[in-house]
Length: 306
Figure 1 (cartoon, rainbow, N blue to C red):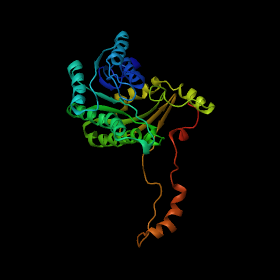
Figure 2: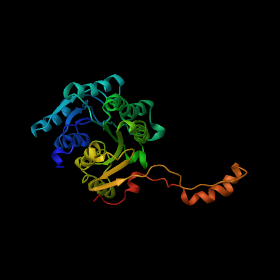
Figure 3: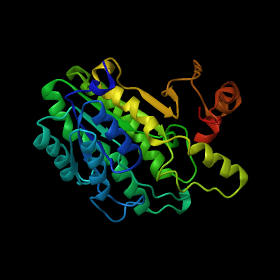
Figure 4: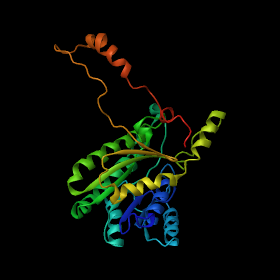
């Protein structure tokens, strides 16, 4: 199957498709034969403002290349507007086959200074938005006995990061959402997977670059362009991935990773039960070698992208 026909005839919704990774995925979906709903409300990185321009630009790029696309500017962060996003696909192209939950904002702050407003703004877009749009599409997927969800998670949630409690919690929540969708909807031929993308863009553009070490890190990050994440999203949307569901992948320049999911590392049993004292005296020494270290994403992915 050629790249130009990999998902021929499918209809894909890509949220946050006006810039960066979302735009790259939308362009790749169209190049692979899909009809694309480009959802973007055109806000700033912290969720302020709003404009049709980013979505229209992506749409124009697709149409100029001979593809089919339409624009939707409804917010993912509200139940009713998420319904309209899916209705846009049905009204424009008659069906929906793929949902890529990519829309996101950032409101970074050290945890003890994070406000409820910063917390809710990020969780509403990333986690609630992924639920709302997925739920809106779910009935159509169930009726047609097919469909694919691709959710953007992040190593900020899977591994950890500083100053992103809202973003990390939302992104780890998306993993739980995706896994449950995969379990609940497998009987209907519906798949759900996550991608933790690495890319230089608006969400990484605020990384400090003051010291020589920071500048070197930013230079490495800039090599990870948004389009490097698109092939995996197209694959997961295709029938070639019919057996792949409930998984978490990461994409990093030319690297692909299948990420681990929580499973028991060590187990201990005591026939007479445990007390706080016996845990301190016996369990902790036995478990200590297997305790997970406190690391950030950049500590785990410490080598240069290849």
